[in-house]
Length: 532
Image (cartoon, helix red, strand yellow):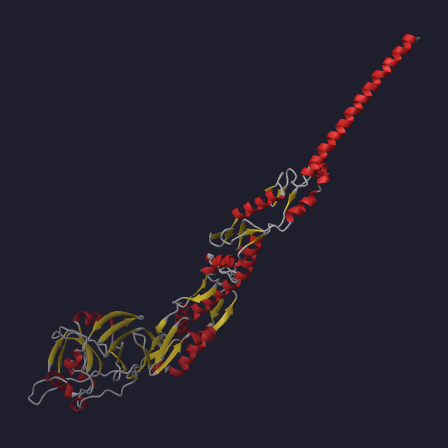
């Protein structure tokens, strides 16, 4: 029994020793843990938690003073890139605007917000913070830098796309100018905000002004197309000359002729053109009596009619001519379409001889085109001023007479060859004699013929060495005319009266008294063979 009791007592002593040891370990552990916990509570009362980020900076284990120094360093290193248009940019740094850090207590407030007594929990949570950097800067310096920005100092004004008329009268779209003009007040306020928040980049694009109208604007394009259509239909300037009267088809008249068209926007109203031409016909046309004539150079003359045949205005063809001219934008003189009529008013075709005394030119016109174009020499000028003329002119004038002008005649006959002789003088001789190959009389003593005695034609020869009233013509030209025309072919002769700008009828042909007496004794047939 005694041995058994001793064994139990011994066993109990070991348990007690173990329990005491364990208790001691626990106590020591608690004391150590308390010391460690207290240490970190104390530590994080003056330091930031591990992993703390403030304004993007690593504040791990930093004190308030160290954090302040880091913020100051960041301010010193700060710069911002300001983006402008067309690839331009500006850089502003802390030194340029004298940025100075000022501690406003934000970091101390952050310590309190850390709650160091709960460091064991807060240590593993999110520890990212943004606090005011607490700095000042020179606003005048910032404003000065802003005013020196390229797009502020040398901005290109914004401009809307617009319609512009070209030199030729057509319209085009002058494209917009996006420019570099901005709302400077708003842009500067955005820069100030970027500085305060220490942004590293600022794009000013949203503060620029932009055009309100662009080149592709449908309304603008539509207006341009409409203006060009109207211009193309109203650009013609057509002069229609009737004697002393001049009618002008111009933009004002053409705009009144415009009518809307579903496919082409606008067109010229053909009925209004027809009414215009019909008005010309009613006012100026003389029907088969034929007082109208359009020269090769576009003048429409009022001529005396010495024959039954004349000219008539073709209303329909004239409408077609003017419509085409309007569509092509023709500018110049353009007479109506004239057709030749016989004595009964029937169209006889378009073959005639045209003679311009002032230009000293003759044309054989066939279907509106000159088949023959040649210089000529006609009779001398009317009413010469002897005080200003050389003796040679006076001698020539004594033996010559003027070519009758501003009239319509017809060729009486064709003769080849022909011997010409002038009036008989008191000594029994003829004033002149001349062998010609081709003779085409059209007005009693006056006709078209060659003259081997002449070498030069045209110009002012007729003023000092003119014919006796006939149309002296180079051989080759008169030959072709002779072989083309026939008796009855019209001959139109015209000239200006004393340099006037328009043609007008002249009085009936003026003949010298001596020639009048001689002609009274001769038949028209005899006179034609005797004339020069």
